[in-house]
Image 1 (tube, one colour):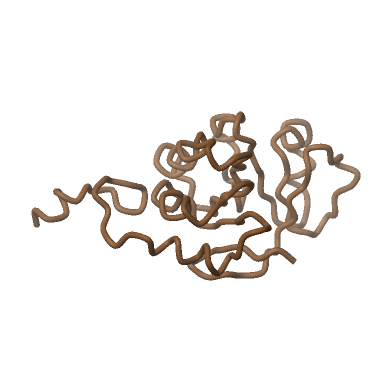
Image 2 (cartoon, rainbow, N blue to C red; image 1 turned 60 degrees about the vertical axis):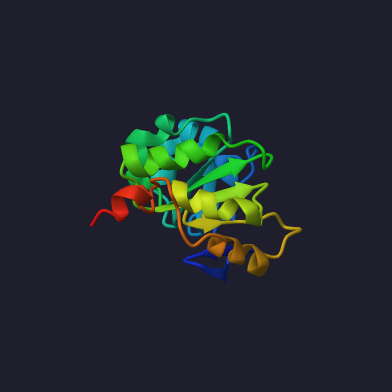
Length: 166
């Protein structure tokens, strides 16, 4: 069983990340599922009627604007980083939190490394599935890499100079 970082602790993963090739007939009715965007596009009505938890995952070339009107149906939005150098989903997480007001879990999946976690959290991520070849307990320490931030972020909307003016 994979372990993820959530709430600043390492926990057992309970959601099933489905591959892009999955069909509706293959799905369990009661498991907690992270479905690919294409499956949601084709079968949203049937997926909403399931008994289990529902989440969605987006690849780096898929925009959060496509699911903006449906966010109330998802407990988790997972954003895939195909390679650690692809930072497009940092913006996606900020859009989900700041423009669309999404309060559910935003999870980083894919090529997720310790060095990224602190910055991902600042953009709105609150769960992280680090690469399988990496230790999640070591990666957890990445959330504590810095004690002070200068810029505004989702986690602290005021830049440092505004925080010090009080």
